Length: 152
Image 1 (cartoon, helix red, strand yellow):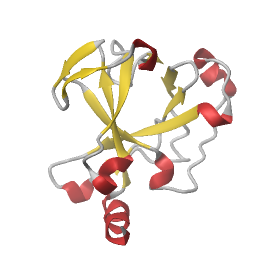
Image 2 (cartoon, one colour; image 1 turned 60 degrees about the vertical axis):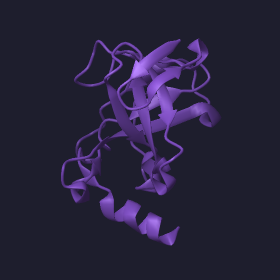
Image 3 (spheres, helix red, strand yellow; image 1 turned 180 degrees about the horizontal axis):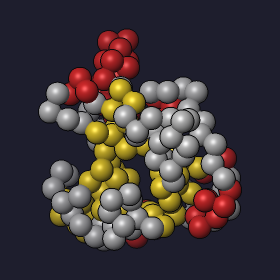
Image 4 (cartoon, helix red, strand yellow; image 1 turned 90 degrees about the vertical axis):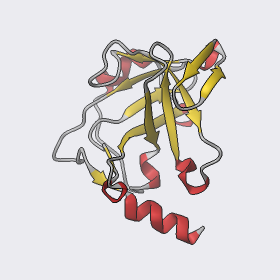
């Protein structure tokens, strides 16, 4: 499937690579089909990927593996919340968190409270909300990424 995106220009995504997000993304329930795009030109920033909507070419959400910025990230999730994405195998589970990048980049943060869980084998995903006492909506990451960049 060819799509003309705002960030990456025209890209071609194989149908079998499209991830169906059950119920959409929080705030965007009508957007349910996405491609995970890696920006290979970003160096350390390659920790940041993009969930590109296949339904709305102008919509791409920056995401990353939460373990990059919080190595002990392990939210408690009820199995019932994950039933819609099929049988999960530890080798084929991908957890992503969304980034917020404000004008003052030093205030960049990730949302650890609403991870997106992907069943890579079935290309199905869902966004879940974890206990607000467990993880914050805005977890600052600029200093963490800056340190990673300096360490090379």
